[in-house]
Length: 391
Image (cartoon, rainbow, N blue to C red; front, side, top):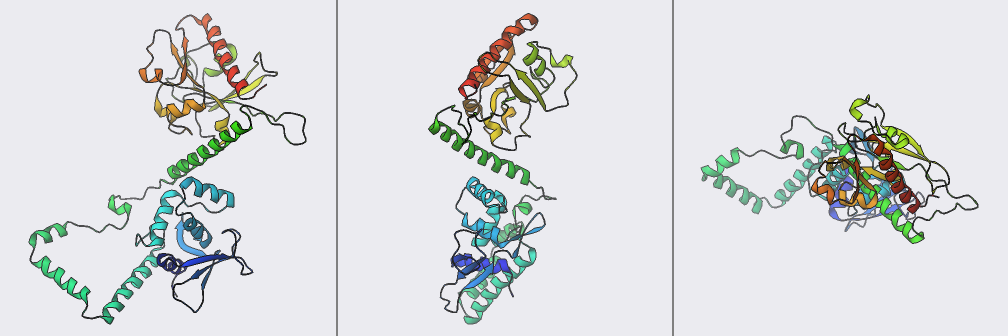
């Protein structure tokens, strides 16, 4: 008996219609509610071919076989964007097949490619045997057909063309992208795919949330149903660079923001933490606000963290934004307030002058001026918080 995945591939390659059925045999609204998938082969009056969606297939991810339900979900989203597919998988709590793996699977299922690096080799061998058998049967039906003549003509051409023989001697079969790159070991780039997909979903969710906020009234704080108290706001976040050469690092940022005193980070022991907290009382806000200061986005596991970023300190290097939700200065500083701190007398790079950032000047030696700089910064942050609905 042929494998499950080969049977499914045969139907999908042929363009056979299929239905998702519930346990009682009625048609299901989606793949989650369905129990089986029923294929209707073209020209077959004997009945439909049914397969259980819970049955494990020969498609493997990290050594684990994937159920047919995830394969059908992938096929249903063959024309969807990676973000839409990922969002639907998360909503339905289904296995998410990453972009590269999904592309590989869809190409194999549709017949665009004859191999898949994620399908058990035994299945591919059966598939090739099946294809070879079909070709052999067609030759038996027409033993003197054009294929044999074409093959004979091809051999004659090779014998009469030494230059072509020399060219063909340098050819090598391309089985998949790993062999074509001549790699000596497989490298798993899955974490990059996951990061890219996560950023896409975060960007879409943030965009939808922003549109909803505009529709409901910008900066308006909505009260939860049945409560007279305003919704509690989470601690705002300030992002600073992770480089030791930055004007502000985790070693000296707390002292400046809390005590209005700048200390060169090279004069302080390095901080081992990626997070510090600063509490600040602002004149126009009813109670002190606690800020989270972080120097990387590894802890940003939910899209809502980006909604809480009220300030981004930049050194002027674009690599700082590589792992940000908005990784270009033009896009980032439309969503987040940007600050470029520098010392008086130092030239501001031309590209930074074109960014939508607030340039803040520190004195190299007159530390009494730090109070004025800190007051200016907090005044700017206060206006940003009020615009976001803080009271």
